[in-house]
Amino acid sequence: NVSLVSSYLSVRQECVRLQRNVALYTNVVMDGRDIGTHVLTDAQFKTNAQQSNRARNWIGTPWNVAALTFKYDLLQNVNLIVKTFGSMSERNSVGNLNPINIVDSINPLTMEYNLRRVDRDFYQNIGTEARFSYKYKLLKQSHILAGGVRAYVGNTKRKQKGTGNSGSDFDFTLSNNQYVTDLKFNTVNYAFFVENIFQITNKFKVIPGIRFEKIYNKMEGTINSNVSAILPQTSNRNVLLAGIGSEYLISNKTNIYANFSQAYRPVTFSEFTPSNATEIIDPNLKDAKGFNADAGYRGTVKNFLNFDIGFFYLNYDNRIGTIIQNGVNFKTNIGQSVSKGIESFIEINPIKIFTDNSKLGSVSLFTSNSFIDAKYVSSKDTDPTKSYNGKQVENAPRFINRMGLTYTLKTFSTTFQYSNTSEI
Image 1 (cartoon, rainbow, N blue to C red):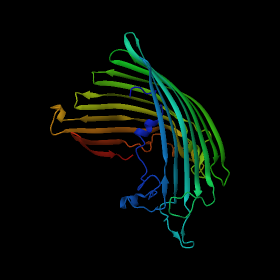
Image 2: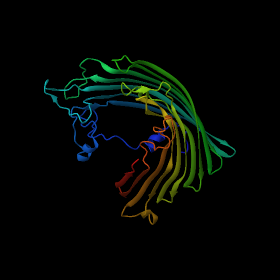
Image 3: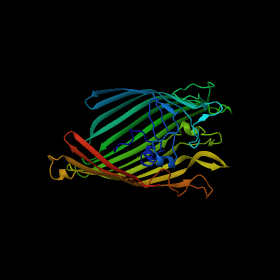
């Protein structure tokens, strides 16, 4: 985890650490079978989480993914890995998407159900990555130079808000052969990265690196056929990111570490698309950016204790959100947030403190804890009554605690876990 640059330097840490809350969907079964409830109200969920009032709702996700990896040792100190990957997939749904307080019932005038909505997505993606590593000696120490290139093309066809039939089976037939939203998305991405592990001493290493991204996006089609909202929209981005990691060995099995990396999150196609007829998209919508820093102490003590205790600081600028402007929803860059806190993991095996050959088996006790302080530090909205400045970031619980134990005896193993997430 010391090396940060060879992976995508994005603000995905925000998803890992902060986006902990998810919507409550129940009875979801994939591959075309009944998905039951669309969404339950809190009261319905508390009464019976397994109930369904959308028995005519279906979802199908035929997903085909393939990858081919080629590994070769060009020389004794030079390794090459080439990976080609692709996918041809779909996400299809048909059902009654009216608010859940509207019963999906038979119309007494027609003696049929109301017409359902049909949404379909088609994905075709292909890419190739080539990575190399070169081991060399300098000043009596061994070092590693690594680099790579990536080429990727992605195409998505999105057809939404089609008027389906009044049936109850898994049928995408349209009553008027037309989708209100009919979009095509295209992404072309080229990337290059290089990093070097400098072994300064036998105990201390530093890993600087850079990554260059070239991203081309194009969106075209119709958002709303009633108002002829035809796009197209294109964007070209050249992004240079840098990062550095470091590690110092306290002993053979413990070390302290510190990392810093720039982060980048491009505006997504969905953020460029109005969610309803009244929403306005900021024409100057900018990509989100920021940086992440962390430091900690980790390792093992003999064979009975594993631990990792660290601090993190995440700066997230140009966050994208929705504010009320002139009485309508306005999607724009709402401001800057800072998330900081402590994360820890401790696992101890009390039996192995005394012996490695217990006939009674092995018991491992573990706990994972997070403390997160996530707040907005600036807000685009100048109205003090609507400003985000100083407010808690949404979907960022202050405490996340998980603890439990694992019992193992020969080939048998079982784990018990308790999890608690605090309110925001």
